[in-house]
Structures are given as structure tokens and as C-alpha cells.
Amino acid sequence: QVQLVESGGGYAQAGGSLTISCSASEQIFVTYAMAWFRQAPGKDREFVASISGNGHRTDYADSVEGRFAISRDNGYTVRLQMSSLRPEDTAVYYCAASLYNATAPTMGELFHYWGQGTQVTVFS
Image 1 (cartoon, rainbow, N blue to C red):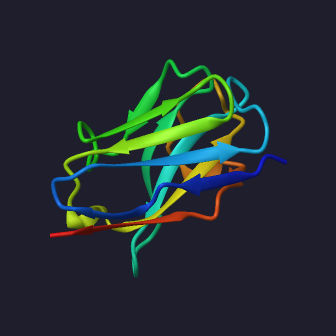
Image 2 (tube, rainbow, N blue to C red):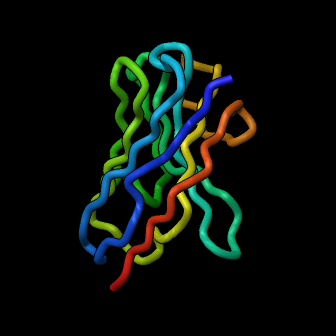
């Protein structure tokens, strides 16, 4: 069972940038598609971005398209580079791993492992 640990969350000013990372307890390249989800207070969890097992496919929520970029190395790490941040990006961000590695899944139900989350707060 792979364990995921997020890091890099914190505070950022609106219009600024922040990068969060997800470190896995085992080799995840190819085996797992990876994704970031987020949940704001009082709201449902929502999909943010995903990347296929080999990194060739990505998908983004409309709300972050063009502002966020998901990437992965060939080992244990996935990152989410966030720019042009907005206050509405404030949420707990969760890393997730899926065995449906040929695609870049967007539905939470397709993910098998989840991290504990990292808080991102954007202030104006």
C-alpha cells in the first residue's frame, strides 16, 4: 500500500505562486496515475489536476487550466505548480494515486490511495 505525503503548502498573496509536492513511499512512476484534489471549507472535494503513469497525459479542472501545472519525476514525486493564485484557490490540497495508470483520471472514485492534505491559503 503506497503512502503519500504532501508538503509545500502555506500562504501566498493573490497573483503569486506556490508549488506543492507529494512524496510516495514507493516507486510510483508508470504504476500509478497521480492527481491533486482540493477541498475548501464547507465545499465538496473537487478535482484539480491529474497525470498519467508515464506522464504523457494530463488533465486540469477548468478553474485552474493555464494557471496550474502538474508534473512528476521518474521516481517518487509529483508536484503542482500554482501561479496567478486567487483567494478561491484556498483549500486543503490532497495528493492521490490511481492504478488506472494509462490515463489521467479525474474522478475521485478511481483513486486508491490518498495523502493527508496540505493547506494552501491565498490572501488578497
